View 1 (cartoon, rainbow, N blue to C red):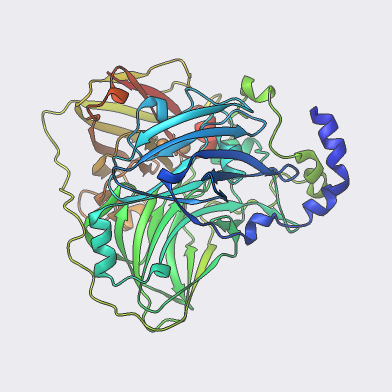
View 2: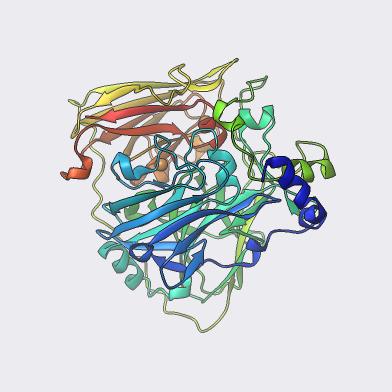
Length: 516
Ligand code: C2O
Ligand code: CU
Ligand code: CU
C-alpha cells in the first residue's frame, strides 16, 4: 500500500487512536536469556501513532520488549528481522563487538530484510542496551519505543546481590525514556528547528514503556540499574520521600561496578549513560524517582538548520503524523524545558522486611585509571556552526569517511574540549569502555557535584562508554584500544564516536574511526 492509501485506510480509526495512549503502557517486560533468542524482530506495533517494539522469538514463544540477560562469556546467535518501513540496525551499546555485530550505521538492514548476527559478551557485569542506529533515523526510531535492555552478570554481580540479601523483586533494570503527551496521546516524532538544535524533548517519563510507572518492592535493599534512554533530556536523578531527598549509593556506572560504593543525594544521568544504585528502604512506604530542576546551560541560541537526509525522503515516517498533528497545531506543545523537574517512576514498599546488611566496602577489583605519561594525546573539539549545527572538529559526519585510525592495543589520552557557547553533549564511544582522568573548566551544578579536586564526578569513577561534557569543559580520558584476539576482530574494524543527544547524532555530530 502506498503512503496515501495507508493514510486513507487508517483515517477512520485515527481519532480514537489519537485520543488514547498506546497499549504498551500496560505491558510489563519479561526477562529473556540472550542465548535463547533465535530471532529479534523490529516491528511497528501501532502504525497510527508510530509506536514500535522489539519482539524476541524464542522458538516456542514470542516476547515483546524483553529484558535480555546474559552471563559474561555467553553468546548471541540469531537473526535480526526488520519489519519497519525504514532501514534499521540493532546496536548493542556498550558491548565490545566486532564491526559486523556492532549494529552501527555502516550496514543498515532494509525494510523486510534480515541479518544474522553472532557475538560473545565479553564485558563486565552491568546494564547495557540496544537500539537502532541507521543514520538519519535513530532519533525517530528510539523515540518510537525501540530501546532494549541487556543485563550482564558475573561473579562480582552475584556477590553484591548476596551481600545485600537482595529479594529478587528488589532488583530492577529500567530504561527511562520520555514521551510528548498532548491530549492524552503520545505525539509522533516531528522535530522542529529548535528540536534539531537542542534535542527532541517530551513532557512525561516513559519507564520500560510505561507512563506513571510504579513497582512494588520489599522493605530492605533495592538495586536499580537505570538507563537514560531519552533522545535528548539530561536527568539529575534523585529520590523523594515526601519532601525529603533520600540518600542512595552509587554502585556502578556504564561498564559495571565501582571499586567501592559512594553515598549521594543526586546524580547526573545523561542520555546513553547508566547508573547502578542501591537504596535502603527500611522504614519507608514509598519513593518517587525524579529528575531535579537544574540549569542545563544551553548557551546556544539562533537557528541551526533542520537536518536533511537524502535517505529520509525515500522512506515513510513511522507514524501517520499528519493525522495527529492537526488536532493540536503548535509544534512546541508537550515540550517540557530541559532541566525542568520531572517525575520518573515510583517504588511502593510492601511485604515482609528483608535483612539489611551493611553495604560491602569493596564491589569489584576496578583499578584507578593510570594517566600514562607515555600515552599519546589525541585532541578533539566539540563546536557549533551557524549553518551546520553541532560538530566534532568542525566536520559534519560522512558515512564513508574515517576520521582517524588507532593501532590495536594502543593506549591514548583523549583530550576533548567543549565550546563555551554550547550545551551539554553526552559523548559516546563504540566498542571500548574508557576511564575519566580529569575535568577542567566546569561550572554550575556539575562543578558543585565534583567528587574530588580533579573535577571528576562520582560517575566518572567507574568504567564509562558515554560521558557528558558541559559547555567550556575539557575532559581527559584514558583510552585502551585492546581488542580480543579472535578471528571476528581481525582486520580493520570501524567504530563510531558521537554525541548521544540523538538529534545531534542524526545531525552531524558523529565521526567514524578505525582500529587497525
Ligand atoms: Cu547508543 Cu552509537 O550509540
Ligand atoms: Cu553505542
Ligand atoms: Cu550533542
